Length: 307
Image (tube, rainbow, N blue to C red):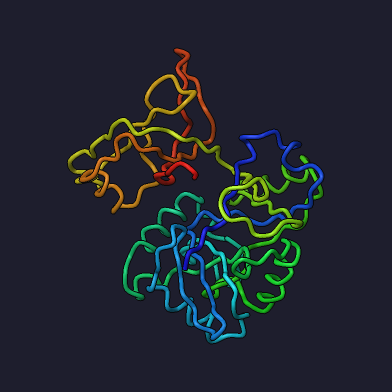
C-alpha cells in the first residue's frame, strides 16, 4: 500500500503569528519514537508500514490487538512506536511518564528495538496513535480528533496501542499558553508539542497545517567525517561521533549522542560522508574565542531532501 505520512514543520523556522493566527489547533504531545502506520482494511485485517512505506511484519502484538478489539475498519492509524517501559511508568504510585526519561534516550532505545526482526524483540514497543483517517478521505481534523478520542476512550495508557496525550485546543497564536505547556514538557524531559489544524484534512507530506513545537532546536548539517571510538570503551568497534558542517556554526560540530549500538557499527562500515543529518540541540553556543557551535548536539536521523 502506498502511504505518504503527514510531516510537520518546526515553528522555530517561521514567525509563529504568520503560521498560527486565524486557525484552530489541536494540541497533543510530540512523541519522539519511530513512525508506524497501521491499516485495518474492510475485512478487519491489519498491515503495518514504516514512514517510507516498507512493511513491518514483526509487530504482531499490536496488529492482533487492533484486529481482536472493536477498532473501526478501513482506517489508517498513524502512530509513533515507543519503548513502553521508558515512556510511561505503569505502577499505580507513578504519574504519567513517572520515569522521567529524556526524549532522546527514549528514541534511541525505541529505534534499537524497532529495527529488530521477529516478534519477541518488539514486544516492549507500544504504538501511540495521534491520527486516524481513511485512505484518500478529506475528513477535517476536528472530526478525525473526535473519532480518535471516541475510539480510544476505554483504552488505557500502556496498551499495545493507545491515544496520544491531549492538551486541548489553541485558538490562533497564544504565546503564554504555549510557553506554559512547554514548561510542563521540559519538567519531564519530553520532546515537545504537536499542533494540528482542525479545519484541514490529512495532508500527506510536509505542510504548515501540522506544526512541531520542540524542547530542543532542530538543525540540519552535512556529514564531513567520523570520529572512531577509543579502544577499551563501551562503544569500541564503532564510531564515537559524526563530524558535521552545520550552517551558522563557525567550525565542525561533533555529534556523539543519540546513536544506537547498531548505528555506531553501521556508520563505521559505511561512513555517510556528504549526507545530510538531522540534529537536535538545546541551542547554538559561543565559546570565549567567539566560535559558534551547538550545545549538547544529539543525532536524530539521516535525512533526504523533501520532494
